[in-house]
Length: 365
Image (cartoon, rainbow, N blue to C red):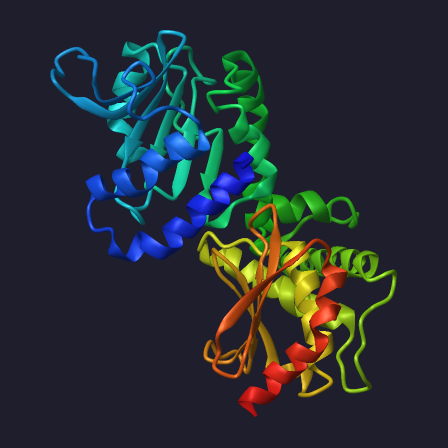
């Protein structure tokens, strides 16, 4: 298996077992050790590669232990501090990592709860761990674009110089994306002024600021809608999907989904709806709305799958998109609501299941 497939396997394990994990120690055994072994490729039972309960006395702190130290070429390269599955991760949880980072001469530190992994280095000051991670991976909701960066940390490909050189770009690109997402959701005064002065020649007064705050927010959402619609047209051969005369336009449907994605970002719930999921939703919706009103077909994204529901009701699933792995699947349901996952390579293949999608809608009406 390649690293993406190994991550997918671990994601399935997390989904199946996280509700039964009650302690930090159980989290380490169930999820963190498999990550070190299965994903990163280190032998967790070889103390020359992985040292559990690693001790390195720091100043007056004696006998403190870090959960794992990963050794490569005889030197400690990676330190890992673990928390209970589902526990929120922030910098206050990393005090031991801060102290051990310089003492152990490690260049990579990891803070994890068994699902989310935050990777730190010392970009801001030599031998002092940064306060912000350069890479954040969530196994159950994987961003496939980050898999090549994670691959650099594996035993097989570990190259410290390559990791450090890429870390700065990763760190700042990630932060810029979060800033842009926040500005698209709720633009602040500086952002409004920056854009206003490029289209309005008058003075930036309070009245102008109030007027353009709403305009900037509206323009941002319409920009997202346009981008989504462009992707939809590209995916569907340049044509918007219209099932019948009662169907809403591709642009209107795209706007609905894009706005829902903005709402997710505002809630900071860690769910990121991708354009590919939106395109798949549009296809399923176009098929299903030949049987029911399109207003009854809703989308609901989760950290593990993207769901299409009738009447926005979890008890009425039409389809699920499992797109967080290298092999994509569409999950379809029978009359007893048993789900069967079908592998797909392109979104156009969803049309092969049109009759089953239509039949599923009728199970609930």
